[in-house]
Image (tube, rainbow, N blue to C red; front, side):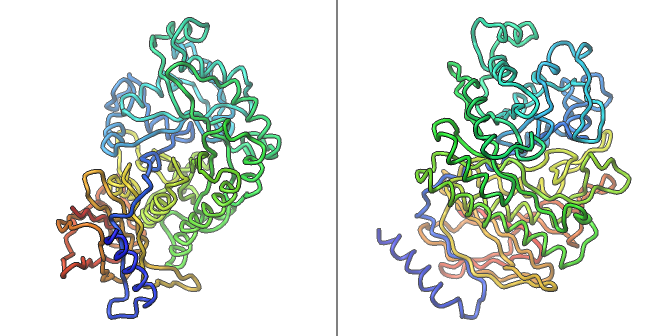
Length: 515
């Protein structure tokens, strides 16, 4: 009781003083006041049949000259395994609402081909289907998240897919699964009922979708040992009315969560901007738009709180990330873009924000895993590289399943043109073993920041750190040089009495672990 009171008093005194003392930048963390667990699923990922995410990214087939494990690229698998990804969403995205699952089962040579009308008009040969996807997530030891076809599919089709995947007994779909080589059901949990039903998933009104959701969700059955976690297709960015209608029209007991999509676009949909060629002002505008995620979540959560004050229905931000113009001379439908230090800051700011909202946000999925949008990994034939975004997820691993700690930060400002925002963006958590994890993004491109950290409620003094930075904001890894941006050890900190003094390098993401 005494510690909590003193911690609160410390925060109050510092806030009232406005930090008008010699050191301008301060962080106060109350290590004994955490209540909310940060779901590991916030650090989830997304794999769609889009461009080279699946084919050439994850799957090359067992006969490929590229080193593989039963058709899965060995290098990509190992990179994702090292990241300990908590979940993987599939098969889309927009593709999910034109995907008919029965086309992707049985002998690969006999599977029908289709046109991927959403993404590049290329032929989809369905060689990567249900069994291949579940084989990959089992290899990774991660949880699958399936998005069902509401846009062009039927209630019967979705119902049979759930039965094929989850039923352990005698039935037509279970027998078909066994015929195709899988005796035991996969017993998946996470199930999305449609994708972007306001757009590529059917251009529905929220009222119409709410009724469709109720119908589809009714026949997406729970089977023994396989209770579905049903996710309603939620809003596009600031469409707060969509959230309002779904919360009104769908009984709370029928949905476990609602999705939300938001992309960080420096320009506009017609001219999004280059992934590598940008000014300091464009850089700051991008990060300001990434930081808008906080307001976005606050407003959607306020609506949800009206109908669900106990926060039983969660938010699933299952598409987020940067979206730029595609790289020159690439298929515009493949959404292939480079990934710079700027993207690392978008990831850091966004993940810090999700941590902050962990009482409502249960899962998030970066778009996408390989070769598409803000990818973790890029491949080119047998070559592979890890992006700056990958390294941020690596740095942030300690936050997964840790307890969110209340904190307060005061920061210098950084300006470019007419754009201005705080230089420091921070999140802190407490691991089960008592380690305090502190993630700090210093977005100032030129200035290192002397930060005073007041860590209340713990006697821990052993500090270790890692960080990510590079020479320039547009620095990125290439197939010729894969280590331009990589994680380094960090030790520019020291204790002064009970204060941890940290010199946060310019344009860096730092994660400290205090034991």
